[in-house]
Image 1 (cartoon, one colour):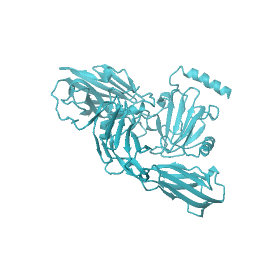
Image 2 (spheres, rainbow, N blue to C red):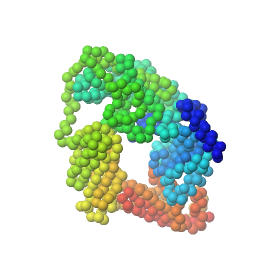
Image 3 (cartoon, rainbow, N blue to C red):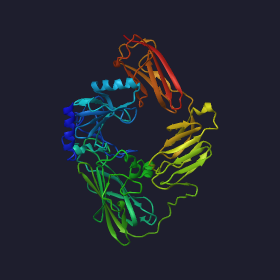
Image 4 (tube, one colour):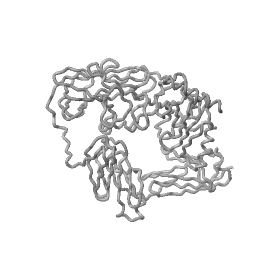
Amino acid sequence: MKQFLLFFLLTCAVYGQSEYPQDYFRHPLDIPLVLAGSFAELRSTHFHGGLDIKTQQREGLKVYTAAEGYVSRIKISEFGYGKALYITHPNGYTTVYGHLQKFSKRLEDFIRECQYEKESFEVEVFPSSEELLVEPNEVIAYSGNTGSSGGPHLHFEIRDNQERPMNPLLFGMQVKDTKAPYVSAVFAYPKDATSTINGKNERVELRLIPKDEGAYEVEKITAYGNIGFGVVSNDKQDLAPNNNGVSNIQTFFNGNKSLEVDFKRFSFDETKHIRRYVDYDYYKSNKSKIQKLFIEQNNPLSLYKDAYDNGFVLVEDSTASVYKIKINDYHKNETWVTIPIEGKPEAIEQDNFIDTSEKTLVYSNKPTTLNSGLITVKFYENTLYDDTYIDFRVNCDTLFLDEDRIPMQKNFYINYDLSNYKSEHQEQLFVARYYGNYWKPYYVSSSRKGDILTAKTKSLGTYALATDTVPPTIRPVNFQDKKWISKYRYLKVKIDDDLSGISKYRATVNGKWILMEYDYKTNTLTHDFNDNIVKDTKNELKIIVTDNVGNSSTFEATFFRK
């Protein structure tokens, strides 16, 4: 063990001197590397932290350690990465393997012991550097579809010694990609009230003209003042139809570099600021992500480089200018967008007037509290990116808080005073969000202190109090009461709650806690008899399921095994 630790420290010193060691990490599967998702790809609430590797629509493929090291973290959760392994390597990097079906037997035995000790399916443990050493090419797990996965695949990351995700392709892994990124739309933005694009002082979509492969032109625009641009662009690899993210974007104004966005590495602290990087208003309205090629206030992203005047360009009267966008995927396939600009002041068309007389100003740099009746909304300092006028209205217990088209840096808080409700009814109340075409309540994470019920959220919209009086349902799947199930390896039960949602569950056999894995996508609890916890012939099963407001249901049955 001392020899390993010495080797660990020496290797850290060597690799600390060279960036992105090549041929050190192997591909974690033994099938061709085909991606469902690329590094830093734009997701709805974050930049993607790794590669989503296709597993040929299958589960159970062998997952190999990318290099020797030790298991430094194991996390099992209902959502997120599901079953995930973290391996720290002698060169200081950590690899992450997510959405796993199960671990190798050695690791499975280790984590099962932790789960039974804590009596919880969801666990997170941090083994020491001496507990779970792994060898090169060792099978450490099997691919799956656990957690917040939309289909079978392996999520794979490489993190530096500061836990910042980096593009794994930087380390020599190869994906077949001969296709240049493509562009779906281009937009121009005025920086201030004196700037115009085609006579307008608002976001303007420009007419995009595809040319040869990897080349686009935009119909000439007239502009004046300080303006910025935005682009909708994605990339495809050769062996998959997925719309993946690009690797690098550079902009040039009259031949001079204006801005670069480099997707090599980012920190988890900044990934939430994707809401600032994309045009959030446009995304919520059109489900398309415009990448803004300029930097607004309160945007701390480290992805930017060489930003001159924060990426904005100054268009003066009677000038002819050219703005260019260069977009690269990781394999240096490149696409250019050329935008000719005629400098010309124009009278602004006043068709974008917004009446703020009935709205409330919420500040970005100081706390703001909105209050009406029994409802209080608190925005703490730096919740919003900009000072913003928000539509704030209350009707009984329904809160109309504008629309979810304004990005938030962090949560704000909605407080309901429940003092007018009887104490026995307070327990079944929750804060619900209503959206879409169906007036259906969706549970919002809430907590109650005395008569105050508080919900936290990052999304504006319509909120109201809702009542949940119906307990969860519990239904056996593959067994019946008082029946023999000796031939079955698994015990399966369906649980569901159609309003506030499942909060917790507990299962016992003959009074002893048993592990049941919860898959929220199928509403299924599953116990594996190979745990060897159930050893009696006659067994009394008891399952208690509780929803988010405290309603609970109890299911009891008897089964027999030899």
